[in-house]
Image (cartoon, rainbow, N blue to C red; front, side, top):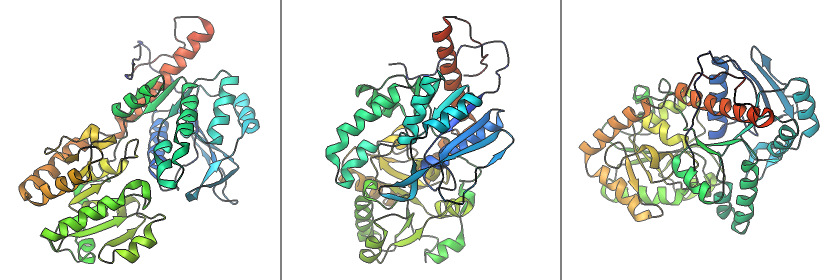
Length: 410
């Protein structure tokens, strides 16, 4: 399997592309897909590309945005099961065919696999437009946490059919690429997620926040950031916190985020601090004001929060999975637990608590790792995939070995 990006170099400057991005979610939605996709779109715009964003209308009064190098097409949607605050796009073949016939994109990039994404894939194929996709959410892994585990095989089959119809599928880690390849997925390209190290930084540490948490300078604050839902394995986070309290009674646990489990957790864990949704500078301050990041999820495709925590100078405890499995060297810039071992996870957290010097070292090295993951590099890799699928599609239909679009980056 070839998961590396190979882009032929040409002596000419690359030309700007017209890119249509199709997604179920985008800011102001608050989730990892919306956040990373907006960073990618902003980066592509900054590099001179024109973007047509196709997404569901979140509210009846929402108006499509337009400006220099950016336009929106808003389509009908409906609430997503288990994510009532978001809407999935309904099929929009007529609207897309009309738009892409009038304003033909060089590449269609589909970020989500819902009905809107499927209709976009069919229209792009009919019009012979190159297509790249993102594999961003492990829906087949999520299914077991919502009582529909029996559907996981059908979900995986649909995802495979969807992505194999594209010219390339971007995945955030080599581990995920290997897993998907073994399940029959084709044409996978590894494109990691990036981090804004100006926003997420140890410099954002807030004594005001720590005072509000009643955490003295020498007290350890554990942090979790993410959806408060079953698939995030919060039970293990709380078990790890309870174990830590036995040896470190004054330790604190802060949960940032919201979700279906919040009300129940607030009733059963009165000693835990529930901070709710946080964004921007406020979120960055919550990260930097903690000391440890405990993230027990094993359903992530990447896990942006892991990289955000590392950039904020936290000692991350996670499973050897997704971003943590790719970025963390246990005992150097974080602590990794063996896959599916809750005992190992708890021991990894305790190892840091028992060794303050190790925790200090790990936090420093986490920052070093994160600084090498800037968004400029990620946008360049995304561009490379798009140029590559455009070249391949043109060669397929013209039979020419020459590329009409010069590419000057890797």
